[in-house]
Structures are given as C-alpha cells and as structure tokens.
Length: 229
Image 1: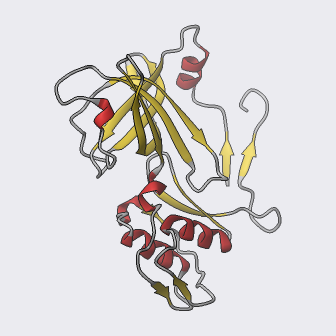
Image 2: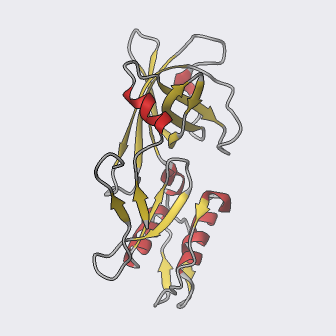
C-alpha cells in the first residue's frame, strides 16, 4: 500500500517561494543510455505527453538551438541516441533534478531560416517496435515473465533495463508468433491478457505491474486531507 503525504519542508518551501527556482535540463547519451554523447546543443524547451492508453507511455517534443559549432549540428543526431529530460528545482544552491523521461528519436527538423531544431521522440518501447522477422514459439506452461523477458532480450533490450516480477503465472496455451508480428505490441497485449501493465518508466526501465482490481486487491493508495494532506 502506498500512502501519499505532504512533501518535506524543504520541498514545500521551494514550491511556495515567491521566486520558484525551477530547473530543467536535457542530456544526450550514446545508445547504452550511460555514456554521454559528445554534443551539447542549446536546450530551449521540451514537452512530454503521458498516456496509459497508448503502446508507448511517453512521447517527447523537444526544441534545441543549434550553436553552430563544428560537428554539433543538432539536426544530424543519430537515431540510436538516448535523450533524457530532467525537471526539478534548486534550493540553497543545490539542484534536485529527477529524470522525467527517457526517449529515442523519431524525427528531427530544422525551422526555416532559424537555428532552432525540432525533435520528436518516444520512450524506449520504440526499441522493440519492429517485427520479429522469424517464427517465435513458446511452450504451454512457460512462465509469463520468461516469455516477456525472452522477447525483449531478442529485441536488444538488456536485462538491466527490465523489472519483471515473479508472477506465478504460466501461459495456458502454446504461443506462436509469425515473422510479421510486432515485438512490442505483442508483449504489451500478452501482458494485458493476464491483467498486467507493461510500460517503460521515466528512467527507461521496462516495468510489468498487475492491474489493480476493485474487489479483492489490497488498498493501493491512501490520500490524506488536512494540513498533512
């Protein structure tokens, strides 16, 4: 059970201050999501859309300023690069900047007669949004999380980027996926058929969580009212 309470005094002070020292940042990484990419174009703005009803949970619209440095053309970003967006605040000279989204590029375009570059992206579900390319089969009674894991691993997602629970559920029939089936949508639909939500969190880790049921499940959230709510 999760209990939502008021933020700590330091956070409240930062949010209630007459001048809120809000901080935002964008950082670009190599395809491993760890090694910084040698490009630091000026960051102008970003907008993240979150929708649990889509195959991809998060999408990004980002505006960069091309600084005109040699080899720093932001419109030439390679599509395997990872973009991480951060948003937080500054208190007493220290920044609190949690990551609010991790993305792969979809498209870059330069604004006409301008040094502004528009970038769109999707969360790391894009890494798995392509066809199997061959027949893939799983035996009846294979653990659900093993099926999800094996499809993701074969699609290039490392085990370190997955957080899959031991569900105690085995698939109740043999599964066979044709080469033209799409990897991510197959995984997403399979998880949903067993009442699990499959998605990538803001830090880029694939999560699988059970959908809460209105009857029979423990309380998920508690909202407090009053001065501490």
